[in-house]
Image 1 (cartoon, helix red, strand yellow):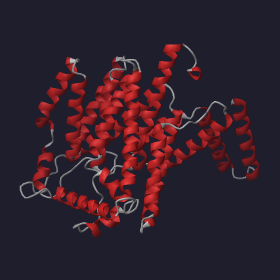
Image 2 (tube, rainbow, N blue to C red):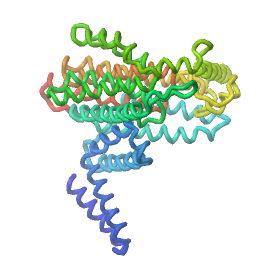
Image 3 (cartoon, rainbow, N blue to C red):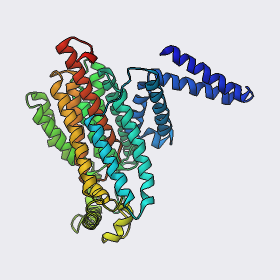
Image 4 (tube, rainbow, N blue to C red):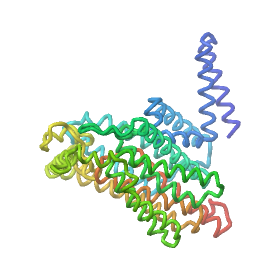
Length: 442
């Protein structure tokens, strides 16, 4: 395979240089670098997967380098396809999660075709296609325990960086609390609620990875990342993030009840939360009129009522993929267009019963894969801890979906991919331990 790649690099570079006649040296140099980059990705495509996951969960490219994520994603996809073409052992087989995701995408397209606002779903369809490629690459390229650990590290480092940015801005802005303006940290994410979702999703992964790493520096780094995520979640002043974080920590304490230290730390943290929550969190309720009514809750309730009306009039295929925002003012008593602020209702209104059924099938398949990975791996192994961390991270994400429309979020696509590579690694390791034979003979 390396010989084929060498010939490919030489031939491609020669053609480019010949066509340019060496007159535009800079373009020729860039072409050479591009060709070598593709060759590197063909030989070791995981080198880009780590960066893609880091960018996705850190929102680094969205904040500083617009377009770099999409460019790297397409480059990696091209390299991966070349690798499949050149190698004979790169077989691609469908899993239950693949089938569920295919059904979900099909229902989105079906609802879009029946929508009178066909054009409004175009942008979201392209965004979904991007995340679909991301899912495809992560689920197919990550194949070993070491790669799974590195990908998990990319999630934590990316999330930790965005969380640190949120803490930094919050500490410098101070408590800017007035009657109408309350500072909420967003880190590198587009809004505070998105940062909170990333924090509570990545936090269980960081906690369970403490059971894997052995070195003091690694354990200290994980503890630091976990504290950054907790702190960043608090300074977003997101009510959903706070509630879900407490629920997840209590679930961890219940699952790890035999570990008295873990249970004690969780209980102490939950009891001390009133002292840790920033003053702005309480002022936020006052500024929105807690005694009269929470204005944010009123708006969200109006948007949800609009979604229920959309569903009752279009129960099978919905009003069309991407049409919720445009239709919300027509169906609800709200002045400006809004999303549903509920992932499940949003899909139900846009894609009907068919769309929601497909999404629930995808969620069940994803959770099933993670549960089987934990069950089939040796207790106390790296895959065992990763699977438990991802399961609770997925639960946190799904709970956040009750009050936010996050069906296009990167986590929605990453978690199914994680369930695939975790289950495959667990079964491969289990096969090798039981039969002491190559994976292909199991």
